[in-house]
Amino acid sequence: MLNDDFHVAIIMDGNGRWAKAKGLARTAGHLKGSDNVRNIAIAASELGVTHLTLYAFSTENWKRAKDEVNYIMKLPGVFFEKYMDEFIERGYRMNIIGKLDELPKKTYDVLIDAMEKSKDNTGLVLTICMNYGSQMELINAAEAYARDVKEGKAELPLTNEVFESYLMTKGLPMVDLLIRTSGEQRISNYLLYQIAYAELVFCEEAWPEFDKEVLKRCLDEYNKRDRRFGGVKNV
Image 1 (tube, rainbow, N blue to C red):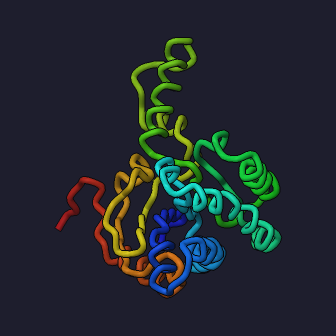
Image 2 (image 1 turned 180 degrees about the vertical axis):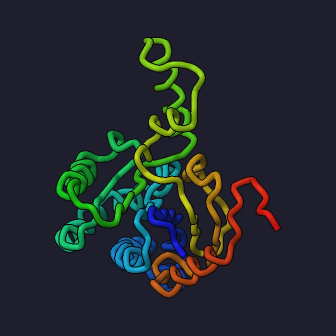
């Protein structure tokens, strides 16, 4: 059984390898992976997930080939042109986090527009992490809190609740389940604070082939786990 505020985070890995295995350009994998966001958002909502957070582009991904990065930066425009109306009809609320001001202006404008158009929706909260890195997020949060303490706007001692209000994920529940696709078993600087007690599931399917059945399999695996949050249940 999923709780009433169930949060799944996914590291969408394997677009390039999927494309290469099919003799296609890496960009074809990114396009297929982008389209799959729509499929998995719908599947997650149907399966009882209330918050879905996806790792789209990390602060480290700028190291990739310039042509590949430029292509990825165009995908939000393509994606929302295809699916924004449907997302609005389904009641999904878009939430984009990361260093958005460092993105190309056209990409930035598309992402801000998606959040604005869906801000009053009350269905699935679909968070896209774009130019996001968890270490950067934590450092920025610590710096912001320190400034507020210095200026008399915040006090010591620092609590979890107060610190969480400085994170980019402010207002979101902690992650219940973290999934990484394509067989890799790393966290890759993703939501390091937010996954403190998340269950981790690594699946072999690349992101473009990750479908509702695979998601359900991951949720079934989650339901088999015994979450104790550091405690011991009475026997």
